[in-house]
Amino acid sequence: MSFEGEQYPGVAPVAPQTQGFRLNHTMLRAKDPERSLAFYSQVFGMQVLRRLDFEEMQFSLYFLANLEASDQVPEDTQARTAWTFSQKGLLELTHNWGTESQEDFAYHDGNAEPQGFGHICFSVPDLSAAQAWFDEHDVTFVKRADQGKMKDVVFVKDPDGYWIEVVQADLMAASGD
Image (cartoon, rainbow, N blue to C red; front, side, top):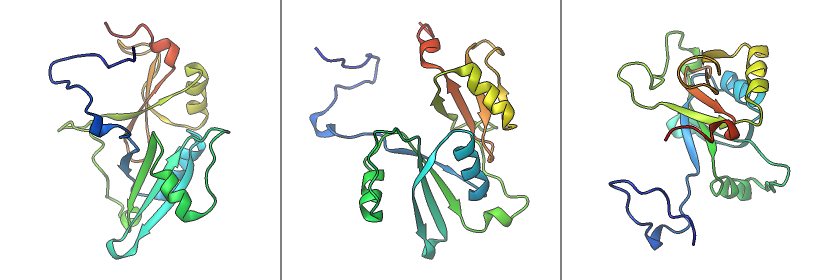
């Protein structure tokens, strides 16, 4: 028998018509793509799979991933674009042209009032080592692993102030009820 998901009010059985659906990416807006790309590549080891520019609408999309050695990324740009849109767990950074030069410009991070969007999350193999890595890179912490009621969970901020949760999978095993 295969896992059918935890059941709660509102959860419906999986419809066969949704077979093959997958969450491809989450989008965050980036004021300054150079600064954000430096952060996500240097601090989180992500690589840009594809950049798509939309000149008429004055914005660019950057699709980032943490690639595995076994990932077979196509060299051809059209094939890579299709491959990018078939993956799981990508981060899309959207840059609206010109925002990087607007001194007072900022996006709502979702955690200030009124709250809405919360955070994205990275799983790491060693939370203590990751926290030390963040310190080496002067990353802004919201919460360290030993702070607050939820131990072994780290929250940091990206250059636009979005929260990033960082967890170590085996330390999360006993979480919740």
